[in-house]
Length: 396
Image 1 (tube, rainbow, N blue to C red):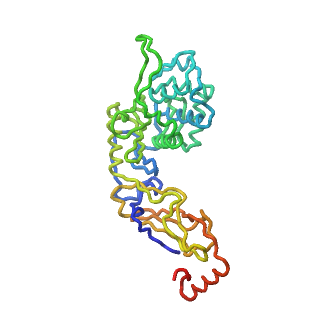
Image 2: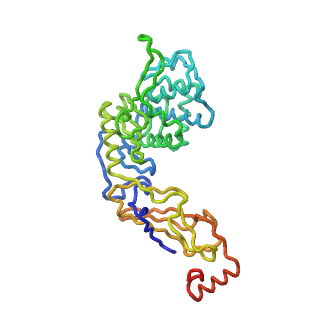
Image 3: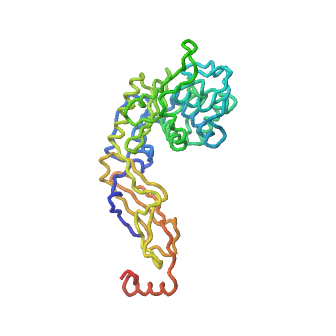
């Protein structure tokens, strides 16, 4: 078994929480921060590393952050071609009469899906959610059942939905961790629609008193600050307090934050900004290997080429406390030499990542190219060269 340390500077990086399944318990000096939020989680989007966890698996009322799941349901149908943005859905009396935040859909009229999405995302319209739910499932109750079913399918085992908007219901619950997971899926799976969450205003309907168009602003406070925010959704009920599921991008690195149970809108905005600043300041994400790009070369036995590249099938990145960078050891392991013929993508060896006080993590490596076997005469010559010189003739 050959053990080849990777000496290239781009691979000499610190070991990451993201490589260890999202738990920082093994790192003796893992940074921590206190928060006033009742529930909170901060994750690195690329690696899934959990930087902050406070009651993140505790069931809680998600209030209007529930609308992320309603959005996911609509985006999924749009992506599959089962729905179009130009499609119009009817406004029922239930939707028209619903209380709380509204986009003010007109009773008995039909509204385009594109407008309903903006009304739900930007204006947090409860009425828009009901129109979408009834239009797609026949009733809001049936739509809520489908939301819960879809949640199970996409890795959210605890969330239960009883409506499409998040108005109070004791059985309507989510966790901060599952909200962060849902936000990640929306960003990753629906890039064509994610931009809606960064729009700051939406104008829809006519004020019956002033006879002027109704313009409402996005309630996400981070969109109005220079913090790299581009989504996602606020929430508030008396039972839940003030919550926010947010995503920010700085210098190519995206963090996702969920907080809930804050006392007021100002406290929510301040705490969100503080926790995000902490996450960017205390942690970094580095690339260890890029999919398909060789990290090392292996010797080939009886092949037309003397070496073949070894690569990972997937990108390997790591999120870590900044001081941990110097503690990493990255080693390529494989049986040396590799006998020809070799086909591209053939499993060969592994990339071993380790550091003091941390669990060792291994990633499979595959061959990055094809290597044909030498002809009979060349194989005889090569074997003879090894017997005499200890290496093939071509290498002398």
